[in-house]
Length: 323
Image 1: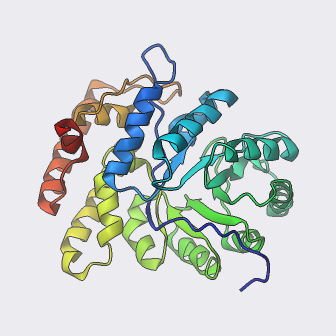
Image 2: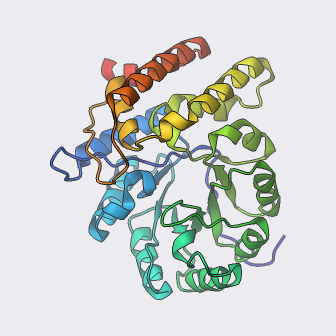
């Protein structure tokens, strides 16, 4: 193990959803809705929360809004689970480091670094590493994570680069979007011995990644059917539920394209249909939720109900409505 002092923070194993931002129909943030949504994630059994992320429409939020939604989530959670949030939005590294500190002051357990905002697409891994280490040096002992966000472009942290970052002792979280199971395994391997967890975003590899040693999942599907993601995190290695795990993994594979279409509008539509009061208003330009898409999602929601009934899962939406 490295002799560098490690962060004492270790995020829990399980599902850490990338949170939506509820808006009012006017386009203003619905803070009461955000508090209610936070409770919904917790009711589902999520191990932590990722606020102020791409699903939150972070690039369409003002700086003050990024801080306020993160603080709202932290305050609502009140220490029940860890919260992480994005803290880098481009510009000189010193400016990014300053906002990392401001996000950390909201009370999050770790601040997430967007890989594609540290170096341009045509810049080398060496440039990326140099700037990442500069950011680490300028942010005191704040625990950090990395997210291979697809916007403005996807920059992957391959395992040799990740190994160098882990050696600083400051990186505790990685949201993996490599879509490559072999690379996921390599990344998990270089993370051994550190207070570090890899959380896979790619649900096609969900079961395999968990069995390979991933700490958990951080996927957009949890904004439609969080109960199923939590169930998989709890049962992926349960020998008595193997057939159920295979069935659920097949469901994730088959529904992959649909849940990514017109996202996050389609996720907000799904929450509405499942009984959660949320506006479809979305600041991001993500396409149109057509009648055809709605019909396909309606069919998928019926499948979700059937799956949950067969797996013995009580819908969090039914629980919430019963209160």
